[in-house]
Length: 286
Image (cartoon, rainbow, N blue to C red):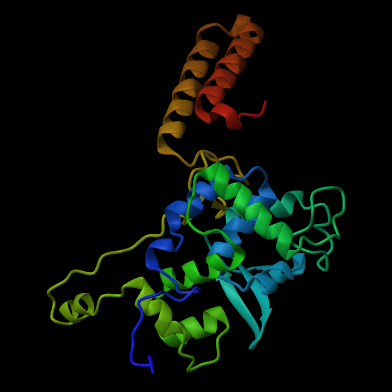
């Protein structure tokens, strides 16, 4: 008798664009993470948008090198897929260098930090971890493992075709899943149509979390890094300039008073140490 009555109640699992995570949120989560594992875990979860089960099953050997950055091998519902990695590479490198079983490709990538390198973290542990990090970061959006997949799909819907999204997220080709995220992303058909007629200029949309490539050794470094993690080259032009000034002062001192070289060397070492403390702040390690 009341089938014709329409209700406005939202479905419990309805996704809203304003609830999706963005790069600013992820950046806050990374800053609030307390160790290399958690930073790598969050950054890779964001970049891949993998299903939590796929993600937690990763092993150390599933991370492979490629010409630029790395790639990850994921086994999902539709088979194996390899995804290129860029933004998560600096955090992955930092974690892998400290992973207690890094030499074993069969070791779980996401192990516990309580002295059990072969004990894999589970879904409940992961969910609790995300909520704790979000609370410290002040991110008030819904926080659970699948939120990263929904948010990443919404983000990439602005950049990938629907066929590419199926391949990236492990959906069957022809699935209607991409359409959901295209809608959530607000992809503007007017902008695309205007570009066809030359009414809109193409703007380069550079991801905020993209790493910086070292010009000397090609290492991928975190965007906020002041020095290359591999070769030590200053990644910030201001840092490089200030260190260069110190070097020039030191050279002048050595030239003017060669007899006092020992005392001058100690003075220069203190000057460099003070400069590094000034530049690196809390990240300084003597």
